[in-house]
Image (cartoon, rainbow, N blue to C red; front, side, top):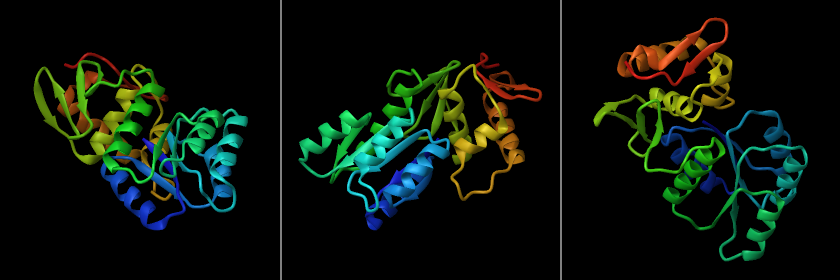
Length: 222
């Protein structure tokens, strides 16, 4: 899943970037509201984390411009501690959730997880469930029939995206856009390698290849 972090506090941004990357997210970072308006509308993000106190253009104005352009990406707003007025204005402007500073990183991760599941019509349960599989996002492993299957970091990222999009045909280019940040070189051959690794671990029928189209996740494990 690819996220955009818009935060001008550099030490905080560095901490969040490191933590989110450990959680398996591809993250782009911006510190200026004017840049955020353009990039939020032009890149295929799955979720945006937006601070309100930004240089260039206030976060509320950034959010308002996104929503005026019909941008439907979930937005989690970061607000100053105990600033109920900011929270209300953020929700009015189209925020999907908010988090007051200072906050514990674990709370941010859980809110992101809940927003992503909700935006894809999935219930916010202890594990992400699809095709008979249970993905434990905290431990980054998958459970099937009570057996635990270990995943590499790359396999985890790919499987999570598939499980949030069951039964959908996803092209290699689409997957690359959502699994890598804007500075990472995207190689469709690497994706194919990770798909094959998942098939060996979960059963070949779980991920179907649609020639000329991409992949479809959601068949019964075999």
